[in-house]
Amino acid sequence: MFLLLLVLVAVNYIDRGSISVALPIIQKEFNLAPELVGLLLSAFFWTYALMQVPVGLLIDKFGPRKVMTASCVGWGAATAASGFAGGFLSMFIARMGIGVTEAGVMPAGGKLNAIWMHKSERGRGATILDAGAPLGAGLGGILIAGLIAATGSWRSAFIIAGAATVLMGIAVWWYVRDNPRQHPGVNDAEAEYLEASHAAEDAEAELGGSKGKRALLPYLRFRSFWAMCFGWLGFNGVFYGLLTWGPLYLAQAKGFDLKTIGWSTFLIFGAGFVGEILGGTIADKWRNSGASANLVMRTLLGISSVVVIGGLIGVTVVADSTTAVILLSVVMFFLRWVGLFWSIPSILGGRTNAGVLGGAMNFSGNIAGFVTPIAVGLIVGATGSYTWALLYFVGSAIIMGASVLTLNYNKRLPV
Image (tube, rainbow, N blue to C red):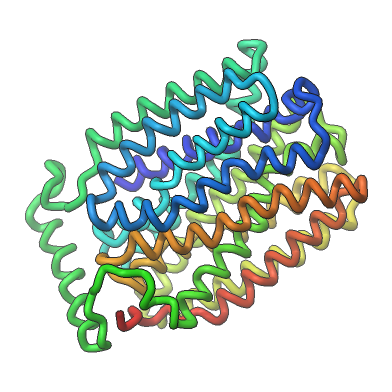
């Protein structure tokens, strides 16, 4: 199940990151200033962010399978449509369409993590799900660059990527189920194992005053809810900044050609994929040894924040291109440990509200998604340099670090 979700999220990020890889060509073809580039890169995130809470409510009501299937088919069609864009406005509208249709994937994955994973395995579940992001970003650099080279057109690359996504929607409907009991590949022992874990969690939550009401507003009074949201906002300020502007930074600041950009992007985001899988494995093994959730999560995510901050500062001062790519790879390796956050909606809200809490968390993160590309575009346009843009990423990492150390990972919130 989670290997399928890993592939799905990877395709998700190949599609959403395709414009960044093709951007040096698109910028020239459409004659775009840096400020317009930033606005175009933000288009996806405006609608993607605004849809998070509504789609989270839909997931909790109708189940992740239906929402995720519809999402795949819709975003595949929107990605293919972006290949027909004739200028800035039509591309902007197509990117907004991709944002609307992709919105259901990650909150649905968070819901499936709550339903399908034993409490002791949710760290790995969260990071397998979320590791599709750096994997897709890394593979996307090579695949989209390769498709552009093979077809001679960025438009054809987008159309092919969109068609592949529609096929993924068919695979999701065929294999995903909203309940382990409904899946033909699950035997009675496996289902009972998960049900016993869920029953124990529910009993513990009732002792703590949780009533399992399906709602979002009651969570707004808790510090851990806001720490979850700001932590994901800070994380995405760095990740989306590198995802959207990273290829153009390598082209303009380091003089890389399209092929070198593709392989450098693969190295940077591939390091993030390895780091995320490793981080989830360490977290689960440490938790299973008897350590408290707070000790495990605050230690791992605190280390992650310190390394990310230091690495980004290093990138601002080194001139050598190879060293910059290595430092960005180290940054991405540790940054992606924060993918453990996809276990938090089920920690704070249980299975009942994992969808809407995942939507709220992802809404917060994607505020950074639409603010960051615009902010970087304005910074680069005003200064003619990427130095202050990198320092903007440092500020985002500081917000992330403060939040991961504030959040209480030990118990469900009493809602």
